[in-house]
Amino acid sequence: MKFCSHCGSAAPAWRIPDGDTLPRYVCANCGTIHYQNPKTVVGCLPEWNDRVLLCRRAIEPRHGLWTLPAGFLENGETLEAGALRETAEEAGARVELGALYTVISLPDINQVYMMFRARLLDRDFEPGPESLEVELFAEEDIPWGDIAFRTIARTLRHYFLDRKLGAFPLHVSALFKRSPREPGLQAAA
Amino acid sequence: MKFCSHCGSAAPAWRIPDGDTLPRYVCANCGTIHYQNPKTVVGCLPEWNDRVLLCRRAIEPRHGLWTLPAGFLENGETLEAGALRETAEEAGARVELGALYTVISLPDINQVYMMFRARLLDRDFEPGPESLEVELFAEEDIPWGDIAFRTIARTLRHYFLDRKLGAFPLHVSALFKRSPREPGLQAAA
Image (cartoon, rainbow over all chains, first blue to last red; front, side, top):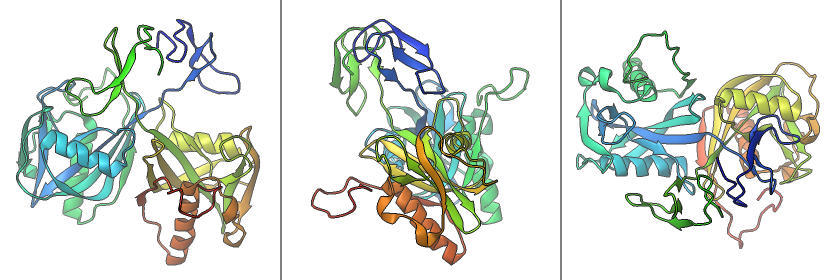
């Protein structure tokens, strides 16, 4: 933040406001405190018999890698409405949402993922502008090395394990930035 | 938004950016798109034997009314860390968090509430700067007419009913703006 969005002054300072405990952008001219908070990413895991629907990303970050339909929750939306919208936008797909399934905090990038289970209603899906391909995958065909995000890989791993166990409880967890010394899939970092 | 926080221009326009589907503040000078997204409110329902801990608000909105400890999730925090911080700040209380219990979308005010169950670890609680009082309430003493927010009343109602039923499943729901013609508690609107 280089300028105050309220008064246009070039003086927003990064400091702890009086009576607060964390630093914020505070305008030295008009006093406005500019709060910044994590964003919610909402999406779903669409099932079709024993297969799940993945989208190959046509945009950065992670262009060309596979993901579940998901994106930023918008003002004015419920979580469910956001998950349905993202699924329509990215996969051209209609689903019936099931239970909330994974909730994953990403404190290093100020996001919280919230993924629902979902039942694909028909096979008339097609890639939206943000996807290169949309495809159904059986467990043995999941491109584990080409999954776009760790949140999505974790959601898929929970799902295939829970399917074997026969129950799909809510999974609440967090993911932290990898240590630079930790080996691992760069693609799914 | 009156000024662009990136270039200081007084020209942010409310319009749908190219390739987007929703209106945003877009700077006509530098082209920056200023996204605005819902905020997460995170908190908990602290239990002590058959009683629950409520805080009486010392700040607006809903000054003087009762609530569970909760507040905006901050950048850099997990949901759990946010719930623990708010409980410490508002109630001076230490809890052990349990399962995520209510998730409530409030699309009209761009918020999502996420409340955990929690076990109060000791009785050394005390009001923080944002609370007038902190007190333990048995079900029959809950001040239902003086609960600050509908999300909190809903969470408490789920809790006391689930306690009778003997199970505490996750409750995912939404609350919408009341019609002006609908009667009801103004205080808990």
